[in-house]
Image 1 (cartoon, rainbow, N blue to C red):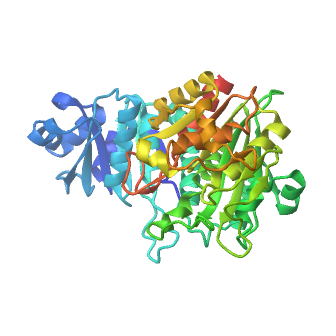
Image 2: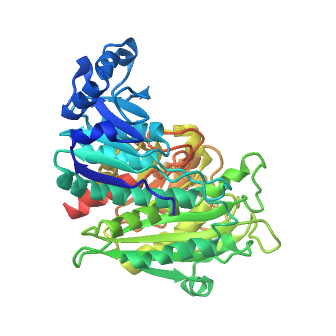
Image 3: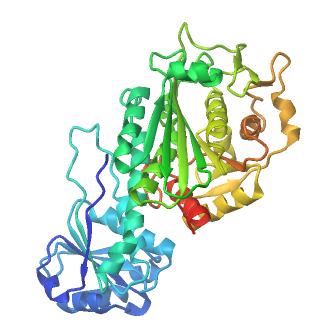
Length: 488
């Protein structure tokens, strides 16, 4: 797994600053406001920080922006990084400070002076998340992330508060690694093996192989993978940190590569379809975070892992499939495969675990990109309560999400004349009809959300807390939802 920067916490010691090597980072607020650590650095550098705070560049900078003073006089350090911020940055600004410092840090060791700064754990989280660099398949892997020593006036309390954030960061990194992996590495077997390895964290992990899936009647899921030499699987991860209450269920689409099947996708950008297991990646990352932080909740994560390939054994447009629920499905487009995988896993989750609620995640539709771009995931739900709680959690974590409409009027678009339902309603309202399809496999008494993460799972440009590529979107929001809704 990609290594997280080693972040340590120590008591503020201004006497050691002159000899500190690598980088020194400080916070300076409007009007040149500085804490004791920054004032000491300012004194050692012959008031260089004060001069910077009076500059036009500093005046134009936004909260959280970082400026660099290279080879400062009076210090052994190579540079001083100056983040524009007062002593009480809000959560968003604190994480942005950490992220901008991580970008500026590179692979150098850094001493960060936070003193009594509020939200210091969020600065540390921003540092960890933006320090991600996926180099597994590069010959030159570069140096590991630079170590960070965060000096605060209460290092023990800060370190304890930061522990949850580091568990979240590890879950995000796990999701990003899975989503970034090429399909010749992250095969269905390899994916399942990586999840099975999380048993060492205290998760109960089961791998359901094809024979058992056939016995269960998962004809929809198995059809998607029957054109591939890689065996289809369902992996069940249980975290039992609560009492006797029913678990909350997370369900993820894990298509390790999606060619579109017989309904072959255009060749341009097909290489991006290594990320079509992004929903399963998020579920896996959340389960890792819950185990690492010993969450006091019962949560089960289920992922359907398949590969959608064209071959002589592939399923075809016109086929009729039998789902685990018993509903029959007419295939009109083999590229509408994710909903077939989810249909069976959703039904299995309800049939076996009787969950208190359920959220599924999937890079499901290109229509979601058209509707919301890369800024928000689409949220579809049968429960105002659960949808509202998730949207609140996503907003609190800065992960964009937007509620989308559903309704019976859309059902007629997926009516079939030869089966109970067809797997695509065409281009119009494509994300909504996909959600309506999934809704048929959710029992009326189960609160449920479908998160279409096609636009947010992997992006071509860096975001506030991640380099370009896999974002790990959803791990923080779902962890927050579980903490707020089931642990508070």
